[in-house]
Image 1 (cartoon, rainbow, N blue to C red):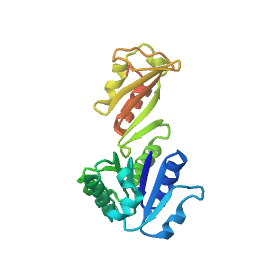
Image 2 (image 1 turned 135 degrees about the vertical axis):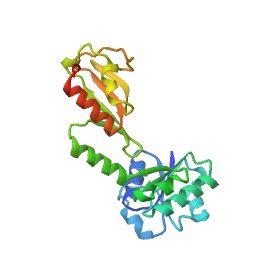
Image 3 (image 1 turned 45 degrees about the horizontal axis):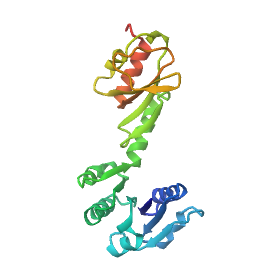
Image 4 (image 1 turned 60 degrees about the horizontal axis):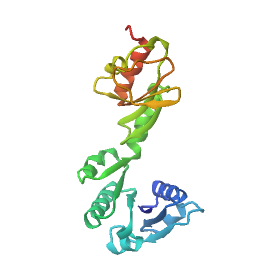
Length: 222
């Protein structure tokens, strides 16, 4: 696939290199030539120097045939403007992602209807989880960490109890995604009875998963 990364800072340079290592065609855009020195020496994609809001710069980068664009400069307002301009003038680009650094600026970026990735918000959320309970097994993070997939080990006190019996503890903060038994995953019905050793995968907020783990620890009779 053909991708453009706008902004060759710490995030942009890492993203460009990882996309390149995955076998994609990558062009990195930055207004300063020296910014490209942050790219890994193994990077063999293209670089384009120029004003990142200039249509000529974007055309030289290949925006008209790009499958996706990631806007990752250090300026949240600039990221929003560039992302909006690309979505407006190049609707053929399937995916336009915008980096957020300052959480206070997220509302402004979201007002443009852009897909936002906030390294600051996600990092803070993950650190909060680990500080509160390092035994959380988050296997996937959606959005900026507001909802994650967790794996929960079902132990013998819950043998024969239903999925619904456990999931009721999460209220609106959790949804059962899968149950893995003897290495085989299934989408269980609410009436599915647990066996000891099952692994339950749930999509939950931090509050939802805390309620579920407390329920697991207290046992089904609590």
